[in-house]
Image (cartoon, rainbow, N blue to C red; front, side):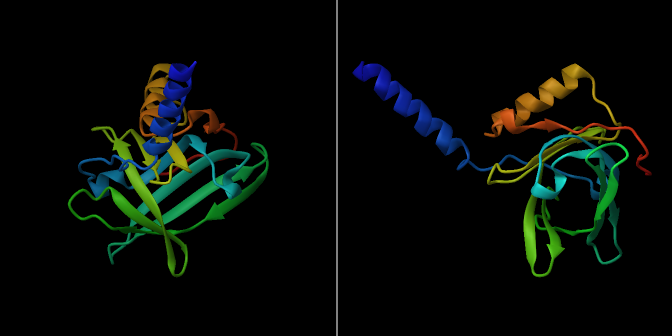
Length: 178
C-alpha cells in the first residue's frame, strides 16, 4: 500500500513538473517561408476561439520587421458571424526566429512559440510555456489521420493535456490566400 501511494505521488509530481520544463522550439524558422496562411486544424482554444469554424491565421512580414497577423474564423458554425483579430507579431529570438511576442493590445505581448515546423513548411505547432494554449496548423484544411496523430503525440510530449485539444472544422465560406 505504501509503495503504491509513493509511486502515485511520484507520478503526480513528475507530471506537474512537465509544465515547468523549457518548451522546445524549432531550431530555425525561415521567416519568409513561414509567412502566408495556416489553417488551424486543432487547438486548446483561447476564450474567443471557442466554437470556431474555418479558423485561418495569416502572417505577412512588414517592412519594419514586425509580422502583421490576421486571424479569421466563424463563430458557432460554418455560416456563423465572421470574427477577425489582427495582432502584431514580434520576433524575440533572433538566432532561431521561433520565439515571438504577439501583441493584441498595447503594451502586452503574449508568448508565441513555434515549437515545430516541418522542413517543407506545411505543418506547425504553436505553443506556450504555460501549456495553456496550443495550435496545430497546416497549409491545407485537412491533415491525414497519421499526421494528425503524430502531431498530437508531439503536443503531449511537450507536457500538454491533449484531452483539451479540440479539432477545428474547416470548410464553409472561408479559405486562405497565400
